[in-house]
Picture 1 (cartoon, one colour):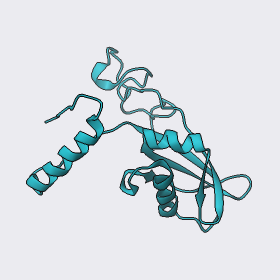
Picture 2 (spheres, one colour; picture 1 turned 180 degrees about the vertical axis):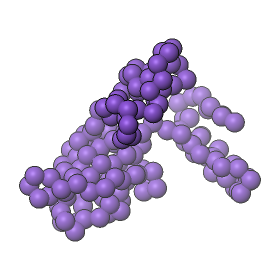
Picture 3 (cartoon, helix red, strand yellow; picture 1 turned 90 degrees about the vertical axis):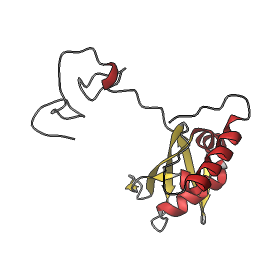
Length: 154
Protein backbone atom coordinates (compact mmCIF):
# COMPACT_ATOMS: atom_id res chain seq x y z
CA UNK A 1 0.00 0.00 0.00
CA UNK A 2 1.39 3.39 -0.98
CA UNK A 3 0.00 6.61 0.47
CA UNK A 4 0.98 9.94 -1.09
CA UNK A 5 0.42 13.15 0.85
CA UNK A 6 -0.04 16.34 -1.23
CA UNK A 7 0.70 19.92 -0.22
CA UNK A 8 3.62 22.03 0.91
CA UNK A 9 3.89 20.44 4.37
CA UNK A 10 3.87 16.91 2.92
CA UNK A 11 7.25 15.93 4.33
CA UNK A 12 6.32 16.77 7.90
CA UNK A 13 2.84 15.25 7.49
CA UNK A 14 4.32 12.04 6.04
CA UNK A 15 6.68 11.73 9.02
CA UNK A 16 3.79 12.13 11.45
CA UNK A 17 1.68 9.56 9.57
CA UNK A 18 4.56 7.06 9.42
CA UNK A 19 5.22 7.44 13.17
CA UNK A 20 1.56 6.88 14.04
CA UNK A 21 1.28 3.86 11.74
CA UNK A 22 4.39 2.36 13.36
CA UNK A 23 2.77 2.78 16.79
CA UNK A 24 -0.48 1.14 15.70
CA UNK A 25 0.82 -1.64 13.45
CA UNK A 26 4.09 -2.42 15.34
CA UNK A 27 5.06 -5.95 14.16
CA UNK A 28 2.18 -6.59 11.74
CA UNK A 29 3.52 -4.39 8.91
CA UNK A 30 6.72 -2.71 7.78
CA UNK A 31 6.33 1.07 7.56
CA UNK A 32 8.82 3.10 5.55
CA UNK A 33 8.91 6.61 4.21
CA UNK A 34 10.68 6.73 0.84
CA UNK A 35 12.60 9.84 -0.06
CA UNK A 36 15.07 10.94 -2.71
CA UNK A 37 18.64 10.22 -1.75
CA UNK A 38 21.83 12.04 -2.69
CA UNK A 39 25.40 10.80 -2.69
CA UNK A 40 28.44 12.58 -1.28
CA UNK A 41 32.15 11.90 -1.32
CA UNK A 42 34.12 12.97 1.74
CA UNK A 43 37.83 13.56 1.05
CA UNK A 44 40.73 14.01 3.44
CA UNK A 45 39.62 11.74 6.29
CA UNK A 46 42.23 10.72 8.83
CA UNK A 47 43.17 7.09 9.42
CA UNK A 48 41.44 7.06 12.82
CA UNK A 49 38.07 8.29 11.47
CA UNK A 50 35.28 5.70 11.43
CA UNK A 51 32.24 5.50 9.18
CA UNK A 52 29.89 6.08 12.12
CA UNK A 53 31.73 9.30 13.06
CA UNK A 54 31.41 10.51 9.48
CA UNK A 55 27.70 9.60 9.40
CA UNK A 56 27.08 11.56 12.62
CA UNK A 57 28.93 14.61 11.26
CA UNK A 58 27.05 14.55 7.94
CA UNK A 59 23.70 14.12 9.73
CA UNK A 60 24.47 17.07 12.00
CA UNK A 61 25.63 19.32 9.13
CA UNK A 62 22.82 18.26 6.79
CA UNK A 63 20.00 18.35 9.35
CA UNK A 64 18.87 14.72 9.05
CA UNK A 65 18.80 11.65 11.28
CA UNK A 66 21.91 9.47 11.66
CA UNK A 67 19.81 6.43 10.71
CA UNK A 68 19.11 7.98 7.29
CA UNK A 69 22.84 8.18 6.45
CA UNK A 70 24.52 5.17 4.81
CA UNK A 71 28.28 4.89 4.46
CA UNK A 72 30.47 2.83 2.17
CA UNK A 73 33.91 1.47 2.93
CA UNK A 74 36.90 3.76 3.37
CA UNK A 75 39.25 3.99 0.39
CA UNK A 76 42.87 5.09 0.59
CA UNK A 77 43.63 8.10 -1.64
CA UNK A 78 46.97 8.91 -3.30
CA UNK A 79 47.93 11.24 -0.42
CA UNK A 80 47.39 8.51 2.24
CA UNK A 81 44.23 10.20 3.48
CA UNK A 82 40.91 8.38 3.21
CA UNK A 83 37.81 8.99 1.08
CA UNK A 84 34.31 7.83 1.96
CA UNK A 85 31.09 7.45 -0.05
CA UNK A 86 27.97 8.57 1.81
CA UNK A 87 24.28 8.35 0.89
CA UNK A 88 21.75 10.54 2.71
CA UNK A 89 18.49 12.41 1.97
CA UNK A 90 18.94 14.70 -1.03
CA UNK A 91 18.14 17.89 0.90
CA UNK A 92 20.80 17.05 3.50
CA UNK A 93 23.33 16.15 0.80
CA UNK A 94 22.75 19.48 -0.95
CA UNK A 95 23.14 21.35 2.35
CA UNK A 96 26.45 19.63 3.10
CA UNK A 97 27.69 20.23 -0.47
CA UNK A 98 26.81 23.94 -0.23
CA UNK A 99 28.87 24.20 2.95
CA UNK A 100 31.66 22.37 1.14
CA UNK A 101 33.22 20.70 4.15
CA UNK A 102 32.38 18.76 7.30
CA UNK A 103 34.25 18.75 10.60
CA UNK A 104 34.94 15.23 11.85
CA UNK A 105 36.90 15.27 15.07
CA UNK A 106 39.87 17.59 14.56
CA UNK A 107 39.74 17.37 10.78
CA UNK A 108 37.89 19.54 8.28
CA UNK A 109 37.06 17.22 5.36
CA UNK A 110 36.00 18.28 1.88
CA UNK A 111 32.49 17.21 0.81
CA UNK A 112 31.36 17.02 -2.80
CA UNK A 113 27.97 16.09 -4.23
CA UNK A 114 28.15 13.21 -6.72
CA UNK A 115 26.14 13.16 -9.94
CA UNK A 116 23.07 10.92 -9.98
CA UNK A 117 23.69 7.62 -11.74
CA UNK A 118 21.90 6.96 -15.02
CA UNK A 119 19.23 4.26 -15.11
CA UNK A 120 20.52 0.95 -16.47
CA UNK A 121 18.44 -2.03 -17.50
CA UNK A 122 19.37 -5.33 -15.82
CA UNK A 123 18.02 -7.29 -18.79
CA UNK A 124 19.70 -5.73 -21.85
CA UNK A 125 22.31 -3.65 -19.92
CA UNK A 126 21.44 -0.50 -21.92
CA UNK A 127 21.21 2.86 -20.17
CA UNK A 128 18.14 5.08 -19.97
CA UNK A 129 15.46 2.58 -18.91
CA UNK A 130 14.81 -0.22 -16.43
CA UNK A 131 13.92 -3.89 -16.90
CA UNK A 132 10.15 -3.38 -16.56
CA UNK A 133 10.19 -0.94 -19.52
CA UNK A 134 12.68 -2.92 -21.64
CA UNK A 135 11.65 -3.42 -25.29
CA UNK A 136 14.82 -5.27 -26.35
CA UNK A 137 14.77 -8.93 -27.41
CA UNK A 138 18.34 -9.41 -26.14
CA UNK A 139 18.71 -10.95 -22.67
CA UNK A 140 22.08 -10.17 -21.06
CA UNK A 141 21.17 -11.01 -17.45
CA UNK A 142 23.91 -13.68 -17.30
CA UNK A 143 26.56 -11.18 -18.48
CA UNK A 144 28.79 -8.94 -16.37
CA UNK A 145 26.99 -5.77 -15.29
CA UNK A 146 30.13 -3.62 -15.75
CA UNK A 147 31.67 -4.80 -19.02
CA UNK A 148 28.78 -6.77 -20.60
CA UNK A 149 30.90 -9.86 -21.31
CA UNK A 150 29.60 -13.39 -20.50
CA UNK A 151 31.38 -15.79 -18.15
CA UNK A 152 31.58 -13.68 -15.01
CA UNK A 153 29.49 -11.27 -12.93
CA UNK A 154 30.61 -7.94 -11.50
